[in-house]
Image (cartoon, rainbow, N blue to C red):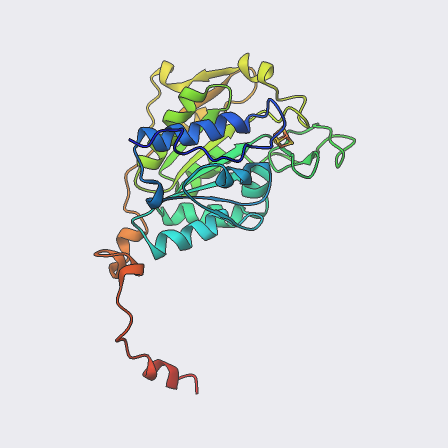
Length: 285
Ligand code: SF4
């Protein structure tokens, strides 16, 4: 079994002390270790933002892509070699801002990718501007009079969009989060795990104390994750009580399973040496 030590890089994370990202990184390594995923068959992709650094600090394959693009590149990786375990990580700005189109289309395809979103409700790397999940009234340097827009609700969006594994974790509970991520990786289809991640430097509202008073686990309430209506109702709960856990899960064919060319073997293993493309080329002349 691959240990978390074997997954740990020599370089140390450079996040602010106390940042929720440390717990998320630990949970990703715990999940990979618990599933005994082979590092050379596993890839973690990141976009831009504090969250994007995950892929630099786990000793598996990594790809630091562009802002909002980890899911798009992850889809390309999965289609090129559908035997790989593909995990993408974003922040709320990366994934629910510029990357939201890729998020929606990947969900409706139900491609077998695990998407981990560090949701701290603020742009951390660019030093504290309002993000797509900032709550109304939230004061930042870009919104000195408070945010006037309504926040994106990632969970209801994911249930509507076609994701077949929809969960929310909390960076203040690493064990619970590790299991959610492991189950998301093991799930066949698009899995999204939105994570409540305190940004200790730029979000002084949604702190560990704030969350600790509010979060509760869906499994303690025997939530039926196959019931879409109940999943919506729980996803809309936000305020004095905030649920974490698995909201919704469904079994559906994955995108890759519907593509005959890669059903038997991955694209990278196809022998392209004797394919005659001259007829196609002539069409362009
Ligand atoms: Fe973490 Fe916020 Fe610091 Fe970024 S700015 S490393 S999210 S605490």
